[in-house]
Image 1: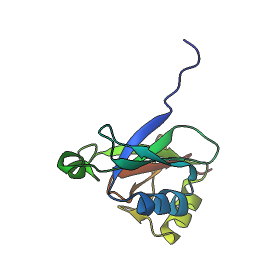
Image 2: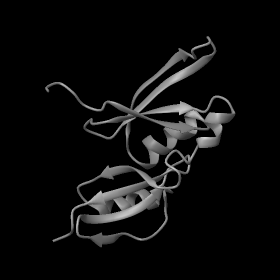
Image 3: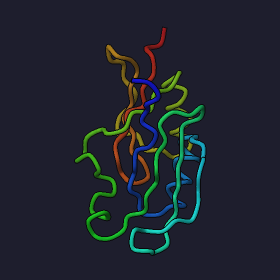
Image 4: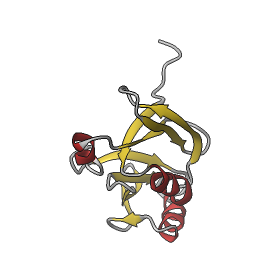
Length: 135
């Protein structure tokens, strides 16, 4: 099958602007869309999409709407690592992200599949920062 890719995944957040500041300012993603939109029942919201530099799967930053959505902010995958950010140099990216205020739960470590460090996003979701094993 041709012409298929995963375009967006949703991250439920408490506030659009704080989430944009985190993903763009701290992680270095590009803000590719920020447009007014409407909920299914006609209330205003925003359509906010960020992507890693160079493209790839983007994130729809969706402000929590109602108690059910608010309950999953930061716990979209039940405390597991649910998002994976692949980079060319995990240690350099770790240093840059740490300086930008990103909270890592442990220092980088080397595994058979590469360098990895777990960090927490603005909402509280866990991510793997992944890079190749240094040579």
